Image 1: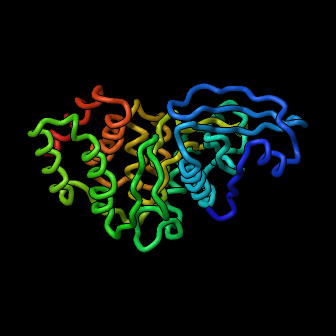
Image 2: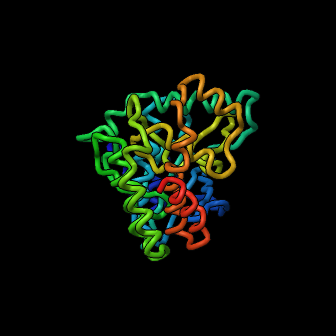
Image 3: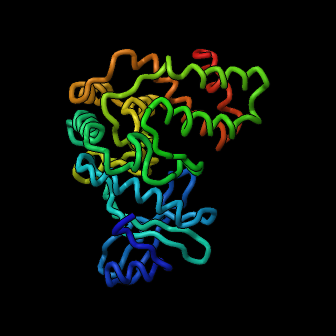
Length: 296
């Protein structure tokens, strides 16, 4: 979090950052977890703010750390972090306001190449004492995401991704379902592969977590960042309908996806579906069990 300042008030933060007062605050819609606002300052500059009454500032500090890591890779657009903090029991995060624009004609191809570039970038500085994980725990949605460093990707995915989610979801499972889940965890060494190199991941990359900037390019937002296998990010892009085929063709040309990925994709998305089960309830149980039965 070096260089990202914590503030005790929104108006004080904006006064310190820009020497300006708040002129207008407009509510924005579309998010499931946080409230979002466009703040217009005296002089006309806009700032984007997320806030949450149920969260502490650590929630947004973790998101800021993920955005900072993505920006540091120098590969793809991510909004600049202005600061975070708490005011009257409400946590907030202040970000650069990204003006939305029309997609460039090569939007999807550029997006694919840029994500491949992020996945190929050196990720050593984002995790301590291990190849996989992150410098601190963060969040996937509003669920805490464990990022304890591990030297094995398969061990990390089992111990820090699937197992904690299965534990939280036990109330949804029958005894045979729990037995199958444990069998899947035991079999993971034979189902997943270790990557050629660790990659910085967005961690929650679906169509709701990127936008088109005024430059016509993709800007990624709302990360659950960590260092892992690039396949996990690609799998998430396919979970809710997928991106344009041009995205995958360009990505695969820049960073060829390893053979057998299609057999592993559902395992990566099992983590996301388990998290949806834990956050939103039993409507996701059938999707979870379909994957568990496939592999166990």
